[in-house]
Image (cartoon, rainbow, N blue to C red; front, top):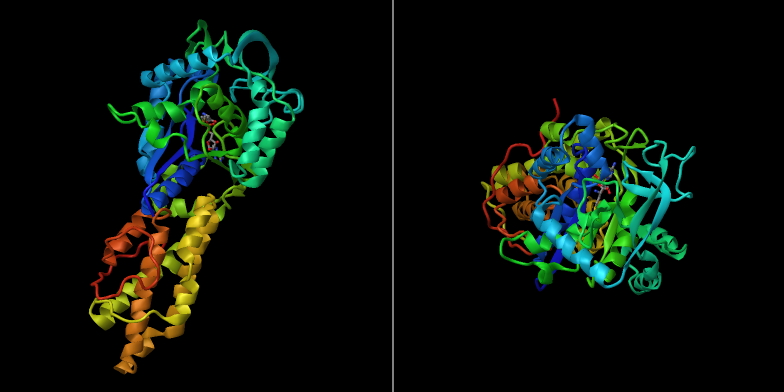
Length: 501
Ligand code: ME8
């Protein structure tokens, strides 16, 4: 396949609190896609970072008696440190308090203003300081509460600048008609479309009372509503991520934004309109995932109930966490996670199905063939089950079906285990009753393990590297069963996923 550019992003996370597993989840989804696309030879740029302005940060800093910048510095460092720990291969980490970002935002917003997409007006409505978002009457919970944070909201009335979102109604409807996969999965697309069809209102672009925000270039008394500053990160980052280089032409429009359903409206409605208003091409696509749930409630900084990714990784390793999250929770849906569920999948799937398979195969090649993989033919029945897996797997990931793609790979893991049981190499090895069949079985096991592990690289990057090195595999591109003839020397390795004590 010819190299092509692939720009994938995560939401930039608020620095009013520390990173939790929910943030790791979105980042890992983007990482899996980025790693997979690199294997396919694409020119990949993977962006993540932190959203550092706005009232939630201002309020959190005030509670702690420090400045917003101090709070931002402290927590942004924790988000940045999370990336290597979860093995995220991001190409850049943007911080919106970076002056290079601010300068670019001012330039773009001035263009929006000059193009005539901004109005002055009076805003009256329900504002949630934790969401940094206004709620419509329809959205309010009982007793005028925020449906997400369950806090009582105040009605505010203030002079604001407005972004003329309503003017983009027709263009947005047209965009959704032209591009059926602009938002996936479909049920999220339908939500966005029905929101648009319900009639768009202009949105508040600035707040006079906000202190911790970027000044509007044409009215510096007013501070920019954080969402405009935040959404623009996806384009500003490209202008300064590489010293002395502007990556915009190479990577914009973004191939894929990864985000959860909580910020669908901002990305699927406001963001494409803002792009149009700023003479930018809208992104190609976005994939909306659900929430990781612990005991039925959304796991969040505000509601507590946080599972610490640092702790999980310390015990089980990043690969195990990556695997569990995308195996247990069907990507796109909400799903519950638990320590018990985690341990059970670790034992049965990672340690037994995969780790044990790898150990057995390597051990048998060493014992029966002195560590050299026999040169033999592809087993016909095994070939049937591997047939077409590379395009099938790739197509699933093209649609951001991360759980289904993992299942495709795991079917092969299970198939290889059945192949061991059916062919019983230890019986064939007795007195070398049928040395050719033993050659064939060992060759096919190594080959199957190689092909499957190449698929698993994005999910289990560290373990896959270890195993591919042991299999003397120099390539990382996806491969078909039988594409390598055998003859290489393999090495035994310690258990990839040791049993939990
Ligand atoms: O909304 N399950 O930042 P944020 C799954 N700064 N994903 C979760 C999650 C959970 N329980 N909790 C959080 C913001 N996430 C804005 C975004 S983008 C231009 C600005 C993930 O810190 C998920 O991706 O509240 C969600 O959309 C995001 O974190 C919200 O992060």
